[in-house]
Image (tube, rainbow, N blue to C red; front, top):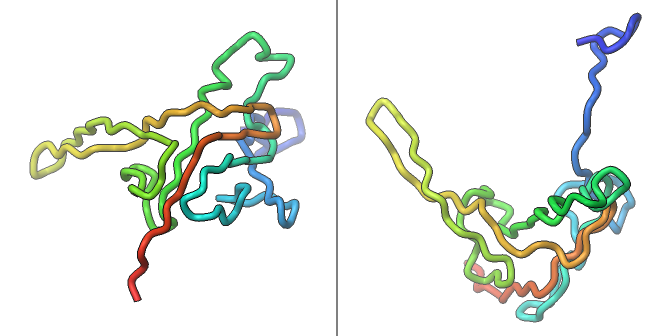
Length: 140
């Protein structure tokens, strides 16, 4: 929809959170620091970007920005699956989802309710503390 006279197909609104790569300085998906944590060592996971919903003049008294959450899954997995057993410090609880299909109702668990608020939250930076990813055996 047009938002002004003479401007066709312009849309206003929030672009959402944008994560910036530390290596390139460009916007990217799935970029965080450290990019390769030491297996089994506890670390702080940091995301930098824009619109990360930290406190600002508009929401300084609104604590909802602390509802930011993060989840680590394998690159081949959907975010709805349970986190790998090798990831600790970022707990996610299952919720039952019921879907009606032609064959009847189907129920599955979605692991999308995740805990642990960030230790640091700002418009440009989120830090999640106490995360550990253990080494996993790989198929050869």
